[in-house]
Every structure is written in C-alpha cells, then in structure tokens.
Length: 347
Image 1 (tube, rainbow, N blue to C red):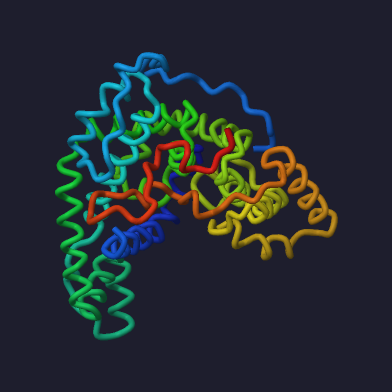
Image 2 (image 1 turned 135 degrees about the horizontal axis):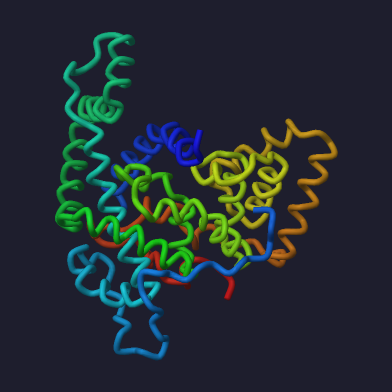
C-alpha cells in the first residue's frame, strides 16, 4: 500500500469521530459562540515573495473579530499573497473553518426511517447516516436546542458567505505558508491535517498542498518543539502513538509516545488523546523502556521548556474547532488565533 493510501485508510478511521466532535462544537457555539531536537531549515513558501517587515503600507491592520469572511478576503488576501504570515494564517483558518461547516452538513440528510423503533433499526440508521441519526435524536430530545442550532447555522452562513473551490484550495496553501513562516496557530492546524474540521473537507487529500504536507509536517513539528510550542509534545505523542493522521508520517514508537505524553503533562497540556493514553501505554512497557521514557522526558523538558509549566488556558487546542465565527459577542478574553501573544510560545 502506498503512503497516500495508508494515510487515506487511517483517515477513514477518524472520520466518524471527527464528524461527531464537530457537531458537538457547533452545538456548544450556541452557548459561547521526530527523534531530532534540532530543526532543519524549512523550505520557504513558493507561492509568494516575502513581505518586508518595514513595509508598513503593505501590512494591514488586523480586522476586528467577527469580520465576515468575504470582507476578510478583501482586507487580507493581498498581504497574505505577498507573504504576510499573520494575514495568511487568519484568512486560511477562517476559510477552512467555514468550508468545513458546509462540508459537514453534506454528510447528513434527513433520516429516511425516522425515529428508530428498535436497536437494529438504530444501528442501521447510524451506519447509513451517523449525523442524520444524531440530528433526529437531538430534535426528539430537545426541540428548543434544535431550533437554536438552526439559528446558529443561519448566523454562520451569513458570516461565511459562499466559498469557491479556488478559495478553499488557496486557503490550504496559505495555511502551509503561515506554518512554514512560524505562526504558532498555523503550525498546529497544519500538522493536524485530517483531524477535526479539516477531516470534513471533501477532497482535501487530493489537493496539491497535501503532498507537501506529507514531507513538511515533521519539519514543522520539530520546529514547534524547538520553539517551545505548548502543543508540540501532545502532537508528537500522538504521532509516535499513531493516534492521529500525522502519526502515519512517523514510525510507531511507544517509548517516545509515552515520553512526549509525559512531557505534555509536565508542562500542563493534558487534553490530547495521546496524553490520556500515557498510563495505559506506560504499563505495557518493560522496566528498561519506562526508564528510557522518563529519561527522555527529563531531557526534553530541560532542553525545550526550561522546567516551565505553561498555562493551558492561554492556548486553545485545534484552532479550527474553536474559531470565532461572528455569532454573538466574542467570548471573554477571545483573541485572534494568529496572534503570537495568544500562544504562550516563548520568544
């Protein structure tokens, strides 16, 4: 099996969980609307020249939170295409979050069999249309919650507007550009390709940027670790444990999965899937392997985080799933996902 084929197979295992997760995120929005530790030089973006830092006329002021996506394209696209990484990051994340909303809904149609009369019918309905069955259950159990969800969808549609196939493809390229330029939130979203919101984008693996992702994601993740990025240990634990799609770019290594999971716990990042598997995986290791994992954890903690514990509230995992899409007032303390000051990454 080719590497692309293996990745596609792995992605299928994540699709149902990702779809259910994204549906939950939409409901919540109604309420608060490798082995190396030295980074190699990442290739420079080939889609646009670099934007000079002193060229202030070309760098736009960040549009306020809640600015509709069509207006973001007008305000940020010129600078993003010229190489301004924060503009590329915000435009890419917002476009992909909106596109995933539309694509997620295509997975769900009205359940033809209505409310299941038996466990067998419920299972058949779930296999035929997982999100459709979830919608039926929500409508039956809480009509008001269903009406609120419909209002939320309408508000998000007004915020997002129509998205062309060209814009979605360009958004993936701009995400790559911002990740290679070192924007922390773009790095997290780029490495996590195929997870959560991005997994709902039809045809994502056929996009030309995906071929580059397979080569560059490990480079970006190594750079994140070298910069003390708070999400790097969790992502690396997932990678070596094969818990997410990017894990298929790494050799399976339970010792490193445990070591990076312990490192994530050590710095206060405890929400990822791999971190929750640490104790289970550690118990399956031999004594010598547990000692090696502990040694690596100590080594990486001192080298990359200088013994610090990072406040988890300052960084929101999976920015594509927590992006503010202009529905209601921004949550207290909400900041632009692409602002470096919001990440907790050391200078």
